[in-house]
Image (cartoon, rainbow, N blue to C red; front, side, top):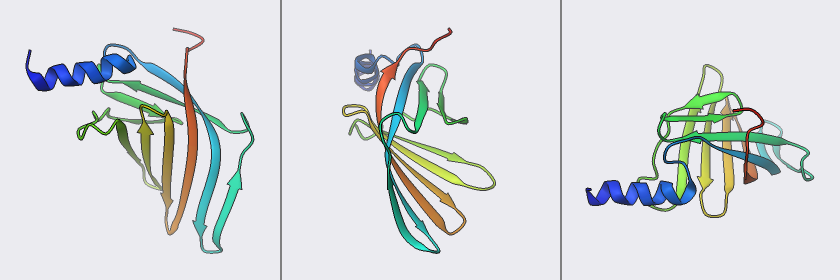
Length: 128
């Protein structure tokens, strides 16, 4: 087995995403919004705003809040997975830390930017 492939398998094997989907429930901690009105912040209480993240390396798929993207391996080995989603109206970037299970989402809509911070935990789907 090639050393690079072995390293990739070890990384994903430790996280459990080598052959199946892993599901995470992500609880919103806070929001920072940069709009025409200036900077505004909001803090959320536990379970007030929860989103789901599905990652599947074998099927090359990531699903976040109804958006689907390709699975991009952690190329630089920092345990942070970077994902991008784009449509005609907005672009989203996710930075998911495999170790701490923290997730940062940045959304650009026209001239405005919204930064959400989440704390995720592994969850089992209700139906398979």
